[in-house]
Image 1 (cartoon, rainbow, N blue to C red):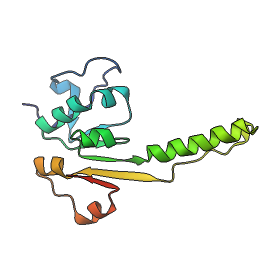
Image 2 (cartoon, rainbow, N blue to C red; image 1 turned 180 degrees about the vertical axis):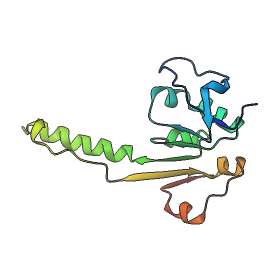
Image 3 (cartoon, rainbow, N blue to C red; image 1 turned 60 degrees about the vertical axis):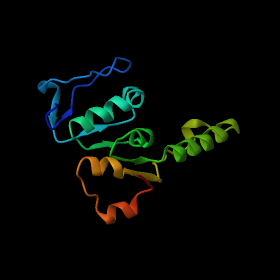
Length: 138
């Protein structure tokens, strides 16, 4: 059984996700992860580790990871970022100089919550947070 601690040690992308962690590889409270090849490729192992250790998880671009059992994902909408990138490509193909194009910040964010995982962890997500979710997974 894992202690209630979160993975801290960085695992090289492309390496196998470890099946066990020692105490010097973890820190208290939760598992958090961004958009890394390891996280996306090993989402089942990451979420299973967290559920076994009874750790809440939060991801940046985590739709697939939350559907695989992660708790929450909050971050920019990838589909919106791709659409904005396509606009930039079109402008460049039409002759605009890339250096003349403004830098944009994301404007659309997604909050995805897995209520089944919350129940498994014994967590109650406040209704005010559930109402703001872009997507709820049961």
